[in-house]
Image (cartoon, rainbow, N blue to C red):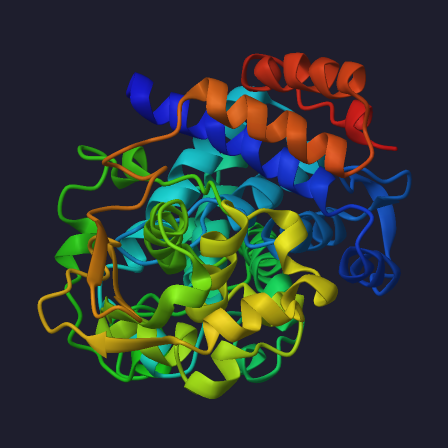
Length: 431
Protein backbone atom coordinates (compact mmCIF):
# COMPACT_ATOMS: atom_id res chain seq x y z
CA UNK A 1 0.00 0.00 0.00
CA UNK A 2 1.48 3.38 -0.97
CA UNK A 3 2.23 5.73 1.91
CA UNK A 4 -0.27 8.28 0.57
CA UNK A 5 -3.06 5.69 0.68
CA UNK A 6 -2.29 4.78 4.28
CA UNK A 7 -2.24 8.47 5.18
CA UNK A 8 -5.64 8.94 3.58
CA UNK A 9 -7.03 5.95 5.50
CA UNK A 10 -5.65 7.43 8.73
CA UNK A 11 -7.37 10.73 7.91
CA UNK A 12 -10.63 8.88 7.19
CA UNK A 13 -10.48 7.16 10.57
CA UNK A 14 -9.93 10.44 12.44
CA UNK A 15 -12.62 12.28 10.50
CA UNK A 16 -15.31 9.58 10.72
CA UNK A 17 -14.89 9.00 14.45
CA UNK A 18 -15.07 12.75 15.06
CA UNK A 19 -18.25 12.94 12.99
CA UNK A 20 -19.80 10.13 15.02
CA UNK A 21 -19.05 12.15 18.14
CA UNK A 22 -20.42 15.43 16.80
CA UNK A 23 -23.76 13.76 16.02
CA UNK A 24 -24.04 11.46 19.03
CA UNK A 25 -26.62 13.55 20.92
CA UNK A 26 -28.79 14.43 17.92
CA UNK A 27 -32.37 13.32 17.60
CA UNK A 28 -31.75 11.28 14.44
CA UNK A 29 -28.90 9.30 16.01
CA UNK A 30 -31.04 8.71 19.09
CA UNK A 31 -33.77 7.33 16.82
CA UNK A 32 -31.28 5.20 14.89
CA UNK A 33 -29.96 3.70 18.12
CA UNK A 34 -33.41 3.05 19.57
CA UNK A 35 -34.69 1.61 16.30
CA UNK A 36 -32.02 -1.08 16.16
CA UNK A 37 -33.06 -3.86 18.51
CA UNK A 38 -30.20 -6.38 18.39
CA UNK A 39 -27.52 -5.83 21.01
CA UNK A 40 -24.06 -7.33 20.75
CA UNK A 41 -20.35 -6.72 21.40
CA UNK A 42 -19.70 -3.88 18.94
CA UNK A 43 -19.23 -0.18 19.58
CA UNK A 44 -21.68 2.56 18.71
CA UNK A 45 -19.19 5.43 18.94
CA UNK A 46 -20.04 7.84 21.75
CA UNK A 47 -22.67 5.58 23.33
CA UNK A 48 -22.69 3.16 26.24
CA UNK A 49 -24.93 0.61 24.55
CA UNK A 50 -23.23 -1.99 22.37
CA UNK A 51 -24.77 -3.58 19.29
CA UNK A 52 -24.39 -6.36 16.78
CA UNK A 53 -21.83 -5.72 14.06
CA UNK A 54 -24.60 -4.74 11.65
CA UNK A 55 -26.17 -2.46 14.26
CA UNK A 56 -22.87 -0.70 14.99
CA UNK A 57 -22.23 -0.25 11.26
CA UNK A 58 -25.70 1.24 10.81
CA UNK A 59 -25.60 3.64 13.75
CA UNK A 60 -22.02 4.79 13.14
CA UNK A 61 -22.61 5.22 9.42
CA UNK A 62 -25.76 7.23 10.05
CA UNK A 63 -23.96 9.43 12.58
CA UNK A 64 -20.92 9.94 10.36
CA UNK A 65 -23.02 11.09 7.40
CA UNK A 66 -25.73 12.83 9.40
CA UNK A 67 -24.34 16.37 9.41
CA UNK A 68 -23.10 16.15 5.81
CA UNK A 69 -19.64 17.04 7.08
CA UNK A 70 -17.94 13.89 5.78
CA UNK A 71 -15.39 13.31 3.01
CA UNK A 72 -16.27 13.45 -0.68
CA UNK A 73 -14.81 11.87 -3.80
CA UNK A 74 -15.04 14.66 -6.35
CA UNK A 75 -15.23 12.41 -9.39
CA UNK A 76 -18.43 10.72 -8.19
CA UNK A 77 -19.52 12.33 -6.02
CA UNK A 78 -19.76 9.80 -3.18
CA UNK A 79 -19.00 9.88 0.55
CA UNK A 80 -16.72 6.91 1.17
CA UNK A 81 -15.61 7.23 4.78
CA UNK A 82 -19.06 7.28 6.36
CA UNK A 83 -19.88 3.93 4.75
CA UNK A 84 -16.62 2.01 4.63
CA UNK A 85 -15.06 2.91 7.98
CA UNK A 86 -18.13 1.91 10.08
CA UNK A 87 -18.62 -1.31 8.09
CA UNK A 88 -15.01 -2.47 8.36
CA UNK A 89 -14.55 -1.40 11.99
CA UNK A 90 -17.68 -3.30 13.03
CA UNK A 91 -16.67 -6.40 11.06
CA UNK A 92 -13.18 -6.40 12.54
CA UNK A 93 -14.33 -5.65 16.08
CA UNK A 94 -16.64 -8.66 15.90
CA UNK A 95 -14.80 -11.13 13.67
CA UNK A 96 -11.13 -10.19 13.14
CA UNK A 97 -9.81 -7.56 15.57
CA UNK A 98 -6.64 -6.84 13.62
CA UNK A 99 -5.66 -3.27 12.77
CA UNK A 100 -3.78 -4.10 9.60
CA UNK A 101 -6.76 -6.05 8.31
CA UNK A 102 -8.97 -3.03 9.01
CA UNK A 103 -6.55 -0.75 7.16
CA UNK A 104 -6.59 -3.01 4.13
CA UNK A 105 -10.36 -3.35 4.20
CA UNK A 106 -10.94 0.40 4.43
CA UNK A 107 -8.51 1.08 1.57
CA UNK A 108 -10.06 -1.55 -0.71
CA UNK A 109 -13.66 -0.69 0.15
CA UNK A 110 -13.20 3.05 -0.35
CA UNK A 111 -11.29 2.51 -3.61
CA UNK A 112 -13.98 0.28 -5.11
CA UNK A 113 -16.79 2.57 -3.98
CA UNK A 114 -15.13 5.63 -5.54
CA UNK A 115 -14.23 3.87 -8.77
CA UNK A 116 -17.79 2.57 -9.17
CA UNK A 117 -19.07 6.14 -9.04
CA UNK A 118 -17.03 7.01 -12.16
CA UNK A 119 -18.34 4.19 -14.38
CA UNK A 120 -21.45 6.17 -15.37
CA UNK A 121 -21.02 9.62 -13.78
CA UNK A 122 -24.15 11.63 -12.83
CA UNK A 123 -26.57 9.00 -14.16
CA UNK A 124 -27.37 7.49 -10.76
CA UNK A 125 -28.39 10.88 -9.37
CA UNK A 126 -30.43 11.59 -12.50
CA UNK A 127 -32.28 8.29 -12.02
CA UNK A 128 -33.31 9.42 -8.52
CA UNK A 129 -30.85 7.42 -6.42
CA UNK A 130 -28.12 8.40 -3.98
CA UNK A 131 -24.73 7.16 -5.26
CA UNK A 132 -23.32 6.95 -1.74
CA UNK A 133 -26.07 4.51 -0.81
CA UNK A 134 -25.84 2.41 -3.97
CA UNK A 135 -22.08 2.23 -4.50
CA UNK A 136 -21.42 2.31 -0.76
CA UNK A 137 -23.15 -1.04 -0.34
CA UNK A 138 -20.81 -2.54 -2.92
CA UNK A 139 -17.74 -0.90 -1.46
CA UNK A 140 -18.65 -2.02 2.06
CA UNK A 141 -19.07 -5.61 0.87
CA UNK A 142 -15.66 -5.51 -0.76
CA UNK A 143 -14.01 -3.81 2.20
CA UNK A 144 -15.41 -6.26 4.73
CA UNK A 145 -14.51 -9.17 2.45
CA UNK A 146 -10.92 -7.92 2.28
CA UNK A 147 -10.70 -7.35 6.03
CA UNK A 148 -12.06 -10.82 6.77
CA UNK A 149 -9.74 -12.44 4.18
CA UNK A 150 -12.47 -13.92 1.99
CA UNK A 151 -11.35 -15.86 -1.08
CA UNK A 152 -11.88 -14.74 -4.65
CA UNK A 153 -15.06 -16.77 -5.17
CA UNK A 154 -16.50 -15.50 -1.90
CA UNK A 155 -15.73 -11.89 -2.88
CA UNK A 156 -17.59 -12.37 -6.16
CA UNK A 157 -20.56 -13.74 -4.23
CA UNK A 158 -20.39 -10.88 -1.70
CA UNK A 159 -20.61 -8.29 -4.47
CA UNK A 160 -23.38 -10.20 -6.19
CA UNK A 161 -25.38 -10.38 -2.97
CA UNK A 162 -24.75 -6.71 -2.19
CA UNK A 163 -26.29 -5.70 -5.50
CA UNK A 164 -29.67 -6.85 -4.18
CA UNK A 165 -29.17 -4.89 -0.96
CA UNK A 166 -28.27 -1.53 -2.54
CA UNK A 167 -30.88 1.20 -2.19
CA UNK A 168 -31.39 4.88 -1.42
CA UNK A 169 -33.80 7.28 -3.16
CA UNK A 170 -33.15 11.03 -2.99
CA UNK A 171 -36.70 12.16 -2.25
CA UNK A 172 -35.37 13.49 1.07
CA UNK A 173 -34.71 16.64 -0.99
CA UNK A 174 -38.43 17.43 -1.06
CA UNK A 175 -38.68 18.51 2.58
CA UNK A 176 -35.40 17.84 4.36
CA UNK A 177 -36.36 14.41 5.74
CA UNK A 178 -33.77 12.28 7.53
CA UNK A 179 -33.45 9.41 5.07
CA UNK A 180 -30.23 10.65 3.43
CA UNK A 181 -28.63 10.49 6.86
CA UNK A 182 -29.29 6.77 7.14
CA UNK A 183 -28.14 5.94 3.61
CA UNK A 184 -24.50 5.60 4.68
CA UNK A 185 -25.43 3.47 7.70
CA UNK A 186 -27.77 1.26 5.69
CA UNK A 187 -25.09 0.74 3.04
CA UNK A 188 -22.50 -0.10 5.71
CA UNK A 189 -24.59 -2.77 7.38
CA UNK A 190 -25.85 -4.14 4.04
CA UNK A 191 -22.35 -4.61 2.70
CA UNK A 192 -21.27 -6.24 5.94
CA UNK A 193 -24.21 -8.67 5.81
CA UNK A 194 -23.48 -9.47 2.16
CA UNK A 195 -19.87 -10.38 2.97
CA UNK A 196 -20.89 -12.58 5.90
CA UNK A 197 -23.49 -14.36 3.78
CA UNK A 198 -20.89 -14.99 1.09
CA UNK A 199 -18.45 -16.32 3.68
CA UNK A 200 -21.18 -18.76 4.75
CA UNK A 201 -21.59 -20.06 1.18
CA UNK A 202 -24.51 -17.96 -0.11
CA UNK A 203 -24.12 -17.25 -3.83
CA UNK A 204 -24.62 -14.06 -5.83
CA UNK A 205 -24.57 -13.23 -9.58
CA UNK A 206 -21.13 -12.77 -11.14
CA UNK A 207 -22.50 -10.18 -13.59
CA UNK A 208 -23.87 -7.91 -10.86
CA UNK A 209 -22.32 -4.78 -12.40
CA UNK A 210 -22.55 -5.15 -16.17
CA UNK A 211 -25.42 -7.60 -16.53
CA UNK A 212 -28.67 -6.99 -18.38
CA UNK A 213 -30.40 -6.62 -15.03
CA UNK A 214 -27.34 -5.54 -13.06
CA UNK A 215 -26.49 -2.63 -10.80
CA UNK A 216 -26.02 -0.01 -13.48
CA UNK A 217 -29.16 -0.99 -15.37
CA UNK A 218 -31.13 -0.72 -12.13
CA UNK A 219 -29.65 2.47 -10.71
CA UNK A 220 -28.30 4.36 -13.75
CA UNK A 221 -30.55 3.12 -16.57
CA UNK A 222 -27.59 1.88 -18.60
CA UNK A 223 -25.23 -1.03 -19.08
CA UNK A 224 -22.87 1.04 -21.26
CA UNK A 225 -20.67 2.41 -18.51
CA UNK A 226 -16.91 2.87 -18.59
CA UNK A 227 -15.95 -0.30 -16.74
CA UNK A 228 -12.30 0.44 -17.44
CA UNK A 229 -12.63 3.15 -14.79
CA UNK A 230 -13.34 0.38 -12.29
CA UNK A 231 -10.85 -2.30 -13.30
CA UNK A 232 -8.32 -0.77 -15.67
CA UNK A 233 -5.48 0.19 -13.34
CA UNK A 234 -6.92 -1.16 -10.11
CA UNK A 235 -4.23 -1.66 -7.49
CA UNK A 236 -1.73 0.42 -9.48
CA UNK A 237 -3.32 3.86 -9.22
CA UNK A 238 -5.33 4.67 -6.09
CA UNK A 239 -8.07 7.22 -6.71
CA UNK A 240 -8.75 7.61 -2.97
CA UNK A 241 -5.53 9.60 -2.68
CA UNK A 242 -7.64 12.54 -3.89
CA UNK A 243 -10.49 12.19 -1.37
CA UNK A 244 -11.65 15.60 -0.17
CA UNK A 245 -12.39 16.55 3.44
CA UNK A 246 -15.06 19.16 4.08
CA UNK A 247 -14.51 22.54 5.70
CA UNK A 248 -18.29 23.19 5.76
CA UNK A 249 -21.08 20.87 7.05
CA UNK A 250 -23.29 20.92 3.95
CA UNK A 251 -23.60 19.65 0.39
CA UNK A 252 -20.16 19.45 -1.19
CA UNK A 253 -20.95 21.32 -4.40
CA UNK A 254 -22.05 24.37 -2.38
CA UNK A 255 -18.58 24.81 -0.87
CA UNK A 256 -16.89 26.81 -3.66
CA UNK A 257 -19.96 29.08 -3.77
CA UNK A 258 -19.71 29.66 -0.03
CA UNK A 259 -16.08 30.70 -0.48
CA UNK A 260 -17.14 33.19 -3.16
CA UNK A 261 -19.96 34.49 -0.97
CA UNK A 262 -17.66 35.02 2.01
CA UNK A 263 -15.30 37.11 -0.12
CA UNK A 264 -18.20 39.16 -1.47
CA UNK A 265 -19.62 39.65 2.02
CA UNK A 266 -16.31 41.03 3.22
CA UNK A 267 -16.52 43.95 0.77
CA UNK A 268 -20.24 44.48 0.04
CA UNK A 269 -23.40 45.21 2.01
CA UNK A 270 -26.39 42.94 1.55
CA UNK A 271 -28.76 45.88 1.09
CA UNK A 272 -26.73 47.04 -1.92
CA UNK A 273 -27.17 43.73 -3.74
CA UNK A 274 -29.91 43.54 -6.38
CA UNK A 275 -29.24 39.96 -7.41
CA UNK A 276 -26.57 37.28 -7.39
CA UNK A 277 -26.32 34.96 -10.38
CA UNK A 278 -24.24 31.78 -10.23
CA UNK A 279 -22.85 29.76 -13.10
CA UNK A 280 -23.39 26.08 -12.24
CA UNK A 281 -22.97 22.58 -13.59
CA UNK A 282 -26.19 21.10 -14.96
CA UNK A 283 -25.78 17.97 -12.84
CA UNK A 284 -26.12 19.94 -9.59
CA UNK A 285 -29.35 21.76 -10.40
CA UNK A 286 -31.96 19.18 -9.39
CA UNK A 287 -30.44 18.67 -5.94
CA UNK A 288 -29.12 22.10 -4.95
CA UNK A 289 -31.13 24.66 -6.96
CA UNK A 290 -34.59 23.40 -7.83
CA UNK A 291 -37.34 24.10 -7.11
CA UNK A 292 -35.69 27.51 -6.76
CA UNK A 293 -38.34 29.08 -4.51
CA UNK A 294 -38.00 26.21 -2.03
CA UNK A 295 -34.21 26.41 -2.11
CA UNK A 296 -34.36 30.15 -1.42
CA UNK A 297 -36.47 29.46 1.69
CA UNK A 298 -35.61 25.95 2.95
CA UNK A 299 -38.17 24.52 5.39
CA UNK A 300 -35.67 23.36 8.03
CA UNK A 301 -32.01 23.21 8.92
CA UNK A 302 -31.32 19.90 7.21
CA UNK A 303 -32.92 20.99 3.93
CA UNK A 304 -30.71 24.10 4.05
CA UNK A 305 -27.61 21.91 3.74
CA UNK A 306 -28.70 21.17 0.16
CA UNK A 307 -29.68 24.73 -0.77
CA UNK A 308 -27.01 26.75 -2.55
CA UNK A 309 -28.99 30.01 -2.22
CA UNK A 310 -29.20 29.59 1.55
CA UNK A 311 -25.52 28.61 1.89
CA UNK A 312 -24.48 31.62 -0.19
CA UNK A 313 -26.59 33.99 1.90
CA UNK A 314 -25.33 32.54 5.17
CA UNK A 315 -21.70 32.75 4.07
CA UNK A 316 -22.16 36.32 2.81
CA UNK A 317 -23.82 37.63 5.97
CA UNK A 318 -22.15 35.56 8.68
CA UNK A 319 -18.63 35.32 7.31
CA UNK A 320 -18.53 31.54 7.70
CA UNK A 321 -20.84 28.51 7.56
CA UNK A 322 -20.71 26.08 10.48
CA UNK A 323 -22.88 23.60 12.32
CA UNK A 324 -24.83 26.39 13.98
CA UNK A 325 -25.99 27.70 10.61
CA UNK A 326 -28.12 24.60 9.99
CA UNK A 327 -30.54 24.73 12.87
CA UNK A 328 -34.21 25.38 12.19
CA UNK A 329 -33.92 28.77 13.88
CA UNK A 330 -30.87 29.77 11.83
CA UNK A 331 -32.58 29.13 8.51
CA UNK A 332 -35.54 31.34 9.50
CA UNK A 333 -33.29 34.41 9.91
CA UNK A 334 -35.13 37.13 7.90
CA UNK A 335 -31.91 38.75 6.69
CA UNK A 336 -30.58 35.47 5.33
CA UNK A 337 -33.87 34.64 3.66
CA UNK A 338 -34.06 38.07 2.07
CA UNK A 339 -30.61 37.70 0.56
CA UNK A 340 -31.19 34.08 -0.49
CA UNK A 341 -34.25 35.27 -2.45
CA UNK A 342 -31.88 37.33 -4.61
CA UNK A 343 -29.79 34.29 -5.62
CA UNK A 344 -30.44 32.42 -8.87
CA UNK A 345 -28.44 30.31 -11.31
CA UNK A 346 -27.48 29.88 -14.95
CA UNK A 347 -26.27 26.56 -16.36
CA UNK A 348 -22.72 26.71 -17.69
CA UNK A 349 -22.28 24.01 -20.39
CA UNK A 350 -18.51 24.16 -19.85
CA UNK A 351 -18.66 23.53 -16.11
CA UNK A 352 -16.38 20.56 -15.29
CA UNK A 353 -18.73 18.94 -12.74
CA UNK A 354 -18.40 16.17 -11.55
CA UNK A 355 -14.66 16.00 -12.24
CA UNK A 356 -14.07 19.28 -10.44
CA UNK A 357 -16.25 21.42 -8.16
CA UNK A 358 -16.06 25.13 -8.97
CA UNK A 359 -17.84 28.26 -7.75
CA UNK A 360 -18.98 31.53 -9.30
CA UNK A 361 -21.14 34.47 -8.20
CA UNK A 362 -21.92 37.58 -10.25
CA UNK A 363 -23.44 40.24 -7.97
CA UNK A 364 -25.30 43.18 -9.48
CA UNK A 365 -25.46 46.21 -7.17
CA UNK A 366 -27.96 49.06 -6.86
CA UNK A 367 -25.47 51.55 -8.28
CA UNK A 368 -25.13 49.44 -11.43
CA UNK A 369 -21.78 47.90 -10.64
CA UNK A 370 -21.20 44.19 -11.21
CA UNK A 371 -18.83 42.34 -8.89
CA UNK A 372 -17.76 38.74 -9.55
CA UNK A 373 -16.00 36.08 -7.56
CA UNK A 374 -14.78 32.71 -8.80
CA UNK A 375 -13.47 29.65 -6.99
CA UNK A 376 -11.60 27.21 -9.25
CA UNK A 377 -11.85 24.21 -6.94
CA UNK A 378 -13.14 22.91 -3.63
CA UNK A 379 -10.99 23.75 -0.62
CA UNK A 380 -10.16 20.49 1.12
CA UNK A 381 -10.00 18.63 -2.18
CA UNK A 382 -7.19 17.48 -4.43
CA UNK A 383 -6.16 21.02 -5.42
CA UNK A 384 -6.05 22.41 -1.87
CA UNK A 385 -6.18 19.50 0.61
CA UNK A 386 -6.65 19.86 4.33
CA UNK A 387 -3.54 18.99 6.33
CA UNK A 388 -3.41 16.32 9.04
CA UNK A 389 -3.37 19.19 11.51
CA UNK A 390 -6.57 20.59 9.98
CA UNK A 391 -8.28 17.20 10.24
CA UNK A 392 -7.17 16.74 13.84
CA UNK A 393 -8.43 20.20 14.73
CA UNK A 394 -11.75 19.39 13.08
CA UNK A 395 -11.89 16.21 15.19
CA UNK A 396 -11.30 18.15 18.42
CA UNK A 397 -13.98 20.70 17.56
CA UNK A 398 -16.45 17.97 16.61
CA UNK A 399 -15.76 16.02 19.80
CA UNK A 400 -16.31 19.16 21.86
CA UNK A 401 -19.56 19.87 20.03
CA UNK A 402 -20.61 16.32 20.88
CA UNK A 403 -19.96 16.84 24.58
CA UNK A 404 -16.45 15.44 25.10
CA UNK A 405 -13.94 17.64 26.90
CA UNK A 406 -10.53 18.45 25.40
CA UNK A 407 -8.63 15.94 27.49
CA UNK A 408 -10.83 13.02 26.50
CA UNK A 409 -10.76 14.05 22.84
CA UNK A 410 -6.94 14.26 22.86
CA UNK A 411 -6.72 10.82 24.46
CA UNK A 412 -9.04 9.42 21.80
CA UNK A 413 -6.87 10.94 19.05
CA UNK A 414 -3.80 9.23 20.48
CA UNK A 415 -5.62 5.88 20.56
CA UNK A 416 -6.92 6.30 17.01
CA UNK A 417 -3.37 6.91 15.80
CA UNK A 418 -2.37 3.40 16.96
CA UNK A 419 -5.43 1.54 15.73
CA UNK A 420 -4.08 0.26 12.40
CA UNK A 421 -0.92 -1.09 14.03
CA UNK A 422 -2.51 -3.04 16.86
CA UNK A 423 -5.74 -4.76 17.76
CA UNK A 424 -9.20 -3.32 17.17
CA UNK A 425 -10.40 -2.23 20.60
CA UNK A 426 -12.99 0.53 20.40
CA UNK A 427 -14.21 0.33 23.99
CA UNK A 428 -12.61 3.66 24.90
CA UNK A 429 -14.87 5.37 22.33
CA UNK A 430 -18.02 4.37 24.23
CA UNK A 431 -19.74 6.77 26.61
